Image 1: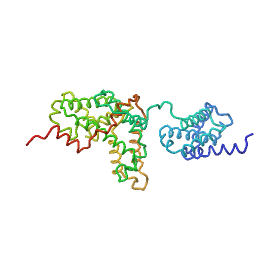
Image 2: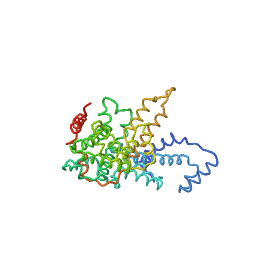
Image 3: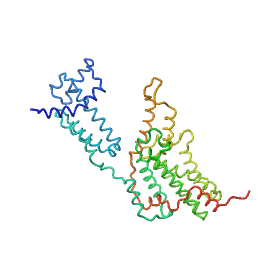
Image 4: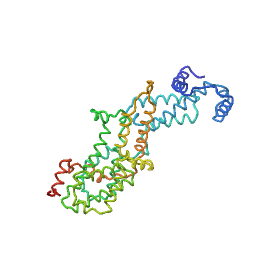
Length: 387
């Protein structure tokens, strides 16, 4: 016999599921044909005869369980950050699933689904063996940076791509709401977006400094051509963020004004720069970049600024509520579409082996100059011509 305690446990486990089904399913009896097919599906699913014969409450309960498990599976797999940062939420979901699994009427596939969700919540993903940003940074701190010349263009491109993606994937989706990155308290509201922006500027400064600090004109030419080669490899790796980091460095006034240097840069390199600049140009709301993102398969590192511009445009140009005082779901769909695309690129990792000596160079700020210092150095190595 089933004890009262067990019955209470079963009712408790299924109360949320039943409520969810009643709220979302709008259960109705349907047409005779629908009833016929419903009974056939119940039979094929292995339900006992006494539960197939018009047991409406049982059907609702089963539908509820399936719906709740599907919601939880999607939540855990697509938004794992919610559980990584909230132990209380994680424990409550696990507790709920354990109660559901005690239901004697639970189907085999439902029990398996619940167990899989619990397994996902309680153990690290064995397939996610990629180094973390924190580990990468710690490893780089203990090493002396080797000079630019010691690293090949391919090595730099791969490690820059790995680094860019690790920084990009750390941004939690909550930071994309409400234009927090444009507020006075942006560092508190959107710390990871601000870190991503700082990383972009740090790499751009590194590239400009690497070119400018060379007193010899041929060394500057060699540095420019090598960085452009890095940018093209990054394009092949779908790291469009790095393409923009590098091409924007070439357009900085301290670099762009070096006419004697640019005269010695090969035609092939100049043509490649033009091609890469057109790819990541903001013209037509990043038309070419959007097309490239549409046609590429992850892994990929998009340019975050493009998405932030889109979100700001939607937030400022579309009201939260309709004229009837209802939530503007059209606006919410547009925002969710952008965030879903960002999440897609965040969740697919690169299979690139970490090379600490290269990332140490990329993170080394010891020789990096600010804008003012860059321009002064630029004037020293190539003084202005008298007018």
